[in-house]
Length: 321
Image (cartoon, rainbow, N blue to C red; front, side, top):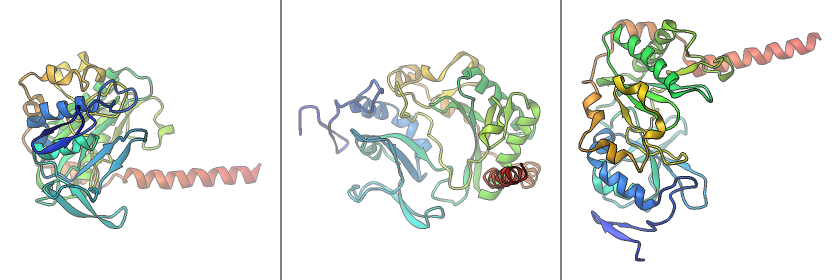
């Protein structure tokens, strides 16, 4: 091993002084040190969840990796799951311990995207609303939209926790009791989005087609089923290496995503785990929310049909000119 290398928890760490990615402003050592420092907070949100990671190797574009590579040590926990989209069995890693977390760090797995479900029992364990502000908007616009989601949840007796996405938006997490069906969670998520939009349709929209959003915050209610989301405390492959970070509702107007980076997050946390403190206990989905959601078309399907309708209208318009 070179002088920059070391062994931690039996994991050989290599090339630690290389820049992590272009414009990161940090090294691979910084990544490994950060993951080690937040392991006690990060591992509980990753445990038993099939893990996809965004890796960035030297001189290459970042890429999403779901299947564990063949050289993965046998001690890394794993789960084999059928992927409907690719019609194949995928061997996912399960990041259940510090050793595995350090191994992923050494693989330059910068972003950690756990599934919204655990391996056992089968069923979705979180309802997620992903809020994406329009280009160039102030972060407080995303926070204002998140408050709409919070109100929509409160109206049916639900509560959620807030975190930055690590990019420009925010995520609202609603923990659910185990065993919720993917279909019902997807329906409930659509209903929450629709209810939040109705509270202030000038601020937020559920329009899946970008051209239909007209400068409003997009309430993405499609994170269900096999979806993943960047974990709280996960770094992101963005300039300055920001991390997804918990935000207390009362503090949300006073922060911005760039406050939380791979270099600043550990000191900001101190001995605390604000995500564990803010996250509500698992909740049951209200029947009225699920029923309402089942009347709302699935966004991607609706967008596909609308796209076809518009294309047909354009063709017919062209033929009549």
